[in-house]
Length: 325
Ligand SMILES: Cc1cc2nc3c(=O)[nH]c(=O)nc-3n(C[C@H](O)[C@H](O)[C@H](O)COP(=O)(O)OP(=O)(O)OC[C@H]3O[C@@H](n4cnc5c(N)ncnc54)[C@H](O)[C@@H]3O)c2cc1C
View (tube, rainbow, N blue to C red):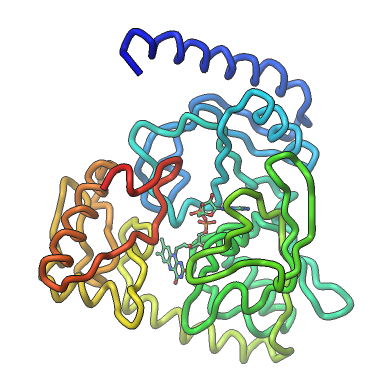
């Protein structure tokens, strides 16, 4: 598109945002949050990146549906933000409607009489572990220390210490981008390493989980303490987004990066952690451009030193890595 043609296109887009805000605001419950140009960096663990054009925290499923339908009618892009622990927000921000299930409505933990547990998508994994431990439910311990939400863990099929999120899932309740709610049994879902196909184009509202067994809270706590100790010893404390790259089949991305001599490598304030080479840490004032620059450097060095193409695990919010690498 030529520079002259871009200006009317931008103006038309701005007009759609104005129309969106004008129509949707009055449809939401008073508890819902709707904010223009909300900075997203502070809502992520890496702490970089610019604003969302519009940021919303629906307080009910009907709020969420109305936001989705209004954005769909005006062809405005929608993105889901969990606890921002697996994301890099671009410095320019996101020209989209960014939704967060931060309201208490989405943070339910309910033990059902049949032994299953309903967990809202906005529930922090730490709280899921804590509440399950208190209730004497075993099987969620591996999630302790993953700083995400249930929704983000479903989308990423988060895993640690030999366990995977979908090991404990029976059913996921989703809302499509058209606002329709469906319950998907695990058997109907396509799940792999850091991947859940059904959640690329839909929003997880919560999940029915099946504990592995009942146990004494003190015994469950002991296992959690073992995992916590492992994490403290093997992961950096500085802001990060967890592991930057997926492990290639049969290999460890951290080991490949370490063996390529990259620990401590730096672009601006983004640095390859000396504690765990698959973590990029923010030394204070890193930008997403610094992180992208360092990701490029790591990939090039590991390719030339070890002949392996590393694929990012962390997501570039609102963009595709292939467009920037
Ligand atoms: C210190 C540290 C340690 C970590 N350790 C681990 C680990 O051991 N194992 C591991 O797997 N990960 C780990 N992570 C990465 C991260 O915590 C997990 O991937 C987590 O599950 C992401 O959850 P989130 O809520 O932060 O999602 P976000 O990062 O906010 O989002 C991730 C993706 O999920 C989507 N999403 C979020 N909520 C929903 C929803 N309700 N419906 C549909 N899509 C949604 C987003 O759109 C995005 O595409 C670590 C991160 C850090 C910073």
